[in-house]
Length: 288
View 1 (cartoon, rainbow, N blue to C red):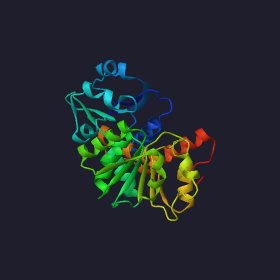
View 2 (cartoon, rainbow, N blue to C red; view 1 turned 90 degrees about the vertical axis):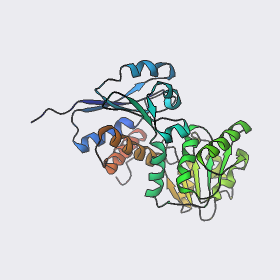
View 3 (cartoon, rainbow, N blue to C red; view 1 turned 135 degrees about the horizontal axis):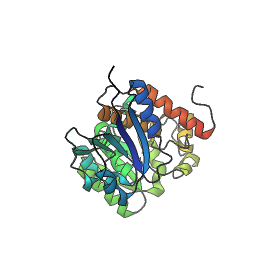
View 4 (spheres, rainbow, N blue to C red; view 1 turned 30 degrees about the vertical axis):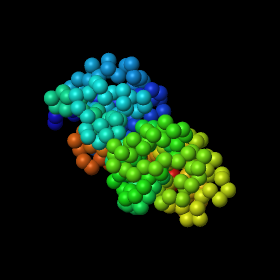
């Protein structure tokens, strides 16, 4: 019997200790029977990414990237895919058979897949809470599911101008509104919250803030979970898509690209993520 192929993959970023990516990818390797594969995490910042890539030899299958590397890595790659270029964000690097370093973005199709899984295929308009790299990926995803206007609620004119610029680049009709009016976003059929932990808590507490029948909330956070807004949304009977849903779906695409094996084991990867989060919080995993 042939020896198993030994390949390496990893997630890079700073800080990185919290990353669930090793849990998800290792669960996939176990399910796929890839005994010789390893997946680690490395603390790497903008100043260290060039040196790290110098050691990106033939034993490497690929890398997952988190902040602050999604833009910083671009000058050090041989090629980036069009959708990664469109949002100037690379979260996946694949080493090709001829040694080329190709950057892509699985966050965008991961968002779309997470929405489709919850029955959200098309909406007439949507709202985005926040700006930045995740918000630009959200706009790229909304280009595929939203047929009308997207309203972005942001702090400051500079961020508002940036979001309108992303909209023009991505072919999305973006209107901007001040963060002080963010409660209005909750009436949209699809709300994508891209803000840091705590930023939307006040929206869950605002009297009359949530509609009687909310639509879908996509909250990109996954720890701690649920966020106050997600919990309030579910109590009203709305559909909630979590950051773990996004993390798992984008990791599924990474596994498929790095290993060449399809389909990646979505259910096993999600369960591994749920178990890991439950262990961190001390709570029982969902359904257990």
